Length: 332
Picture 1 (cartoon, rainbow, N blue to C red):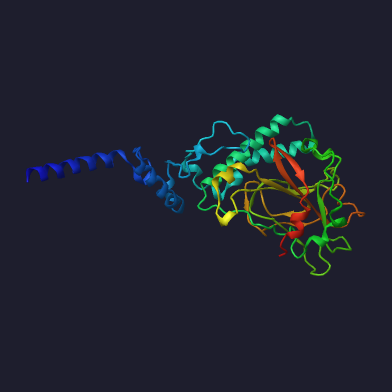
Picture 2: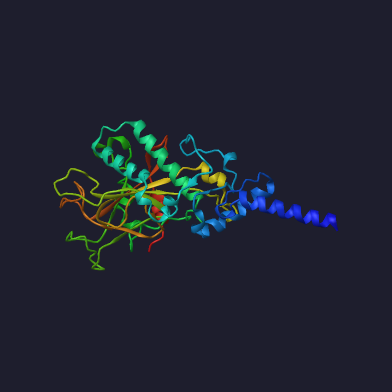
């Protein structure tokens, strides 16, 4: 009997000590055993589903990230256990206030005027992709990109692309040339607008510009003056997540880290409905087709959307021809 009482007493003593030193509500586990790591892995989904429990919490690493090669720009000082402060716990809903998006948006505007160094752009892109990667890891769910895009104009398909795709030419294009580049790494997608009032002649409504897939707006401009020499007018840049293996329909974290994202560019819009840091979904309305931009504003230019696609090469946007993706894109 004395042994039983002594055993119970030791259990109570251990429990009181454990309760004082382990705040399970805030996930401050001090255990280092395999059992503790399993608890962290299981607690992660519940933490995301209950944001109120994020206060000053230390996010654990359910995917063992340190064993996966991080190829998004060779980010230095990457912390797989980021501490999320109280002020940042709702940042998924207000990412337009995060400096990394504002910084890239401002830098992109400077690039248009020229004189920005390559190293400055590379640094901004690394910060951007690093932040997006960490944000994705903290999401309540991770969705793969669709196998096919949504066509960027509502009610239209690839037949609206000028010259059957022959208008694309990226020879001589360099992102750092800004507004003075001498190429056309894009497809112009024309709408039915004979009188050039930015209203579809058949539907008698503005034509919606749609996001081709999941992504985050990284830069845009909702202002343009008719005397401006800027050719893009009111434009949008979106970074799309390219990750996950489609083998057997299962996502792979290794693939997520090994593949870079795709950036899409939408220009000459009349109205913009998104801002930097805003997440967009496939087919979401982001703008309306317009005639803003130095050349697009002129009468000789039919009303169209200027659409480009880029991949990151050495942390610099490099265009590629998206014509085949546009041909396969779904019309909404």
